[in-house]
Image (cartoon, rainbow, N blue to C red; front, top):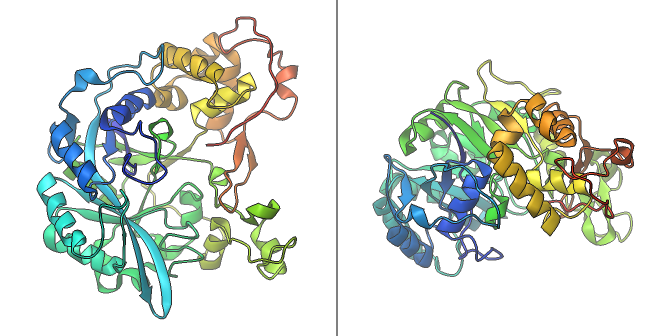
Amino acid sequence: MEYIADLHVHSPYSRATSPGGTLSGLAAWARIKGINVLGTGDFTHPGWFNCLRDELEPAEPGLFRLKDEAGIKAPFPGAAPGDVPVRFLLSAEVSSIYKRHGKVRKVHNLLYLPDLASAERINTRLAAIGNIASDGRPILGLDSRDLLEILLEVAPEGFLVPAHIWTPWFSLFGSRSGFDSIDECFGDLTPHVFALETGLSSDPAMNRLISALDRFALISNSDCHSPSKLGREANIFSTGLDYFSLRDAIRGNRRDSFRGTIEFFPEEGKYHSDGHRACKVCLDPMETRGLGLRCPVCGKPLTVGVQHRVMELADRGEPVYGTDAPEVYSLIPLPELLGEILGVGAASKAVMEAYSRVINRFGSEFELLLQTPLDEISGQAPILGEAIGRIRSGRVIRSPGYDGEFGVIRVFAAGELAKLDMQRSIFGEEQSRRGRKHSGI
């Protein structure tokens, strides 16, 4: 079975998250997006763990479904997505802050488990170390290597994936917080790590510049704090719909079962380039080095971004892939694309109305962006077909993100839509144009 999985999400128990991220809210948006498997997120939090235990029931081995699937309602008026089967896989993110080799390390790791009993054992061990009730993503003074050891001891069928490995502040390779190698971080337990999460600001091509990462599968997930952001990155599998087949497909890292990843264009990630947001300074690595890592406006230290950090560790000039490596599909989320076409913000009422009509006409978001033939799209919505054709071929305009500021990816150059006679709506009805603006995710 071919299906899409987003394995890194957060519940309302995590800080700065939407109250709409309930299990039914997540499932509703998964149907809109065309996602079949969702990480639950936050199983370490006692309140969310109770929700998981009360609202989910076992489905296929290691996966769960909502007990009340009939209660899944469309997340916005007018939307009628297909009846996409949605399953949940137990997941959590742990923030480890600890000292190693005389330096404070701040590393986020993802845990994946096949059953609630394993999650309960993990929670008991972690609760003895720190406060797991303060946040859905607990902050613990626990070495990443020791977290992995706990997982292997009490939940040997589980697996750990270092999260968003290049983020400057909280990741394995972070410029402000991390290590220069995976062995440095996990020591003697490194062989038990078989996958890495690339994060929004990097993509597989960047990671494949580093030969030391060749043996690791690269997974991509949304890390969403609001269910509408589900699937901004995700994974495509062609394997059994169960926890163990999914885990083994990632471990095997072959295109026949781990089909590929759905990616942001990495420039859209909010830590792709170097910079200083307070001074609106965005720089490439060579400029940063020439400035001695200091902001040219205020003189304070610049935040060294993902592109710079990858270059520091790279030992190749071009990415190298295995012959059966998973495919890579770089996309622009559909609400952003519709916002650009309509000249309004991605969260505006006009975009949500258009989004609803597009989903009802073509199916889920991923079915449209990845699978629907371009001539079929263009026959009903010409400008949308043109835009999706450009995205599929990578012909986009990129303004990179930096120092916590999301980048912007556009399909059309300034003034181009006017030349294309776009005084119409998505499906061709006459519509007055509004002032153009764009809101990045």
